[in-house]
Length: 207
Length: 207
DNA sequence: GTCTATACCGTGATAGAC
DNA sequence: GTCTATCACGGTATAGAC
Image 1 (cartoon, rainbow over the protein chains, first blue to last red):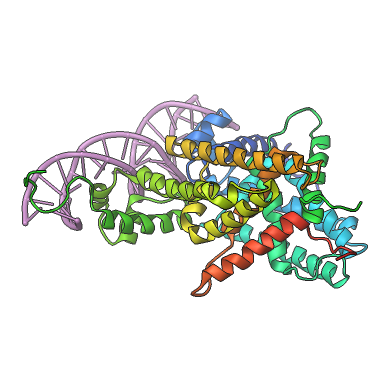
Image 2 (cartoon, protein in one colour):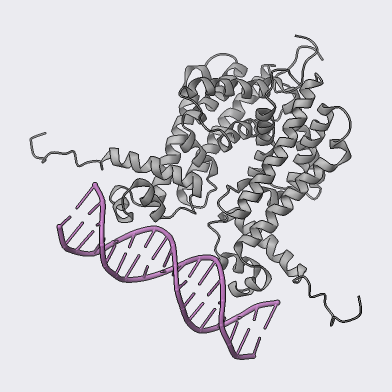
């Protein structure tokens, strides 16, 4: 801890520039596809030359890795929140679904990219592995909620968690943020998703 | 109609070979991604050389076009079936959802490819346009079913049709055919999807 | 209908000046 | 930290023999 370094912390590359580069890259990846994006495309989007990119990151795949890691960290953080850990399983499941919707919207570019990953590189395979882990955690929640008698007895937990997140994740394919407060928008969408999943489309005679 | 041609009908290129090439290509597209697939990859998968492929099709994009057209034709055929055209709107909607699930499974490779298309070429944009048209037809069905009092009054038809097909289409991301009769498997999955969408996850006190 | 050979271009990545 | 210049490679596509 003795004074020895010049001025800037040299341990990490300039995080500001990496951040700028990353958000530009993610936008391009989403529009042109990861494979369809060239370093030239990324350079244009970031306003620097191809070569300069290599000063900040190791290459194209590192940008992908940074993005999907961010998305996954956000999703797993939801599982760690109190609402996902306490109470009846059905309430925890509803909480996770709602918060996942909000997280998808809040973090749309990174999550969109994550959901398009198919497993052709080491980075992509690790991302798929973490997605599977998330899915298993939710399947366990579904199983618990069935055991507690709050969800229909006939449901298959694994299939159900897949369908739940199939629906939730599909929002990334068409949702585009509208106004200043996309917090309120996110809440409304999450309500619609939770309502559809838990109560279904059909009008009920009672109620 | 006077005898003049040698032996083979020269008006269409050999459809058998095109068919073989197409199904090989679609498998590769799904694994490696369309952009990530080279003509070399396609040649290896089809067991011929790169150059020979150009004897059968104009290039990579024509193979994509053939595939997504097939998928879309299958989906639109469902809308033309009697079950989608007669009776209460809620029954027609349920019919379309069920048959679409079956169609997705029956025609899995082509539908999978269709669902991954993002609109970067003319072919892809035309496919997206036809998907939107399909979605609008279903949204109209949802609206009619609400008007007839069979679906919950609070639903937004456009959002609802998007969520319905988000769930249905997500099956292409994990479903892999198992046994000989994937007809029965398809029916069981379609039942699960229809049950979840129309009646929801929650156990009901009555019934 | 398939092949070999090749044209031509864009790719990811590096070297080294400033 | 950014640039210009360049590399080796793999991409789509074509020419022309068999």
